[in-house]
Structures are given as structure tokens and as C-alpha cells.
Length: 97
Image (cartoon, rainbow, N blue to C red; front, side, top):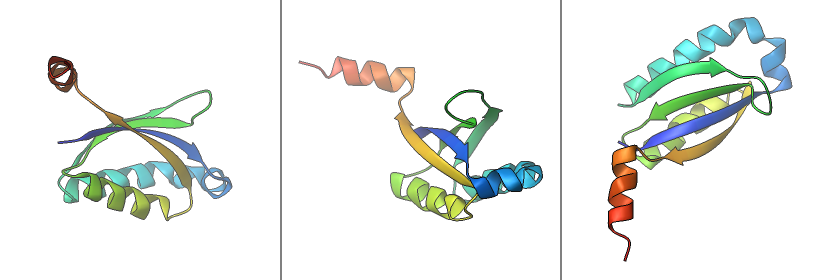
């Protein structure tokens, strides 16, 4: 199952309603699981991004649909990194000429 690293920032609307953020994290986890994916730990971060999450989804299309639905709430902006496991990394390197 493809893995992703989600780098997130709160929008002005997200900061204004920050007390509802834990409930939004719970709702995102339920939506990802309902689509057959998995959401790892939510981590509040300091620096350029406000939070980081590792997630999995059955397909890239499923992931894109989920993230568009979650972001459409207007409280977060995200950047996604496709993440490869160590086993996937080793398989990719093994295929090099």
C-alpha cells in the first residue's frame, strides 16, 4: 500500500478554530480507515510546518480523493511526500543497471 508523509500548516481559519483540531484529526483518521488506508501518529511540530502525519492509502487516487476532501474544510494546507519503505527502497536500488 503506498505510503505518504503529510506536511501540514494551519490556515487562518484553522488557527481560529484550533480547539476543534483534535476532533478534525479523529475525523481524518476515520475517513482514511474507511477508504481502506491507515493513518499513523499525528505530530504537532515547530518550524516551517505545524504538523506531520504518516498515512497509507490503497491507491494514489484514493489518497488524492481523501486529501482533497479533508483539505476542502479550509482549516489546513498540506504538502505530500510519497514515502517508500526500506524494503521498497532496496527493491528500487536492486533494479538499477
